[in-house]
Length: 124
Image 1 (cartoon, rainbow, N blue to C red):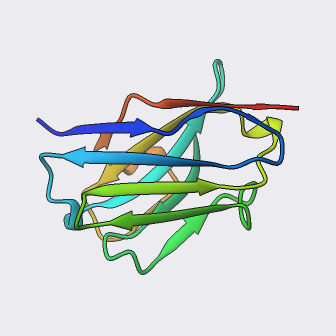
Image 2 (tube, rainbow, N blue to C red):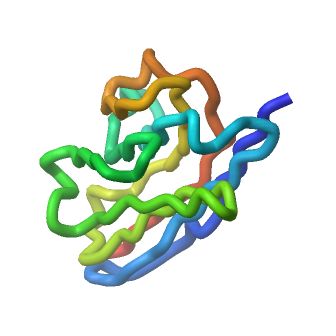
């Protein structure tokens, strides 16, 4: 059974940084595009960033461009999200997801597997 586990969330002051990690097990990591999503209670899930299965293509939501960087390490089956210059508006539960396709998308409905999420809270 595929398992995806996020880590690295926490409480940080505005302007600070966090690095989220996601480990994926029991899937052929190189055959999956990967994405990061976030969701606040009562709101729709938002695509934050994604990366193609080769790692050669990335995409970002406008709200995080220039502040967040997605990366992947196929040798370790790991996905990362480096978040800099954090703002209170970045406070959300963050999820990683895997899509059985080469291209990444910021729409949530094309993803096959999801983690349980890690909470990020940015204090003003």
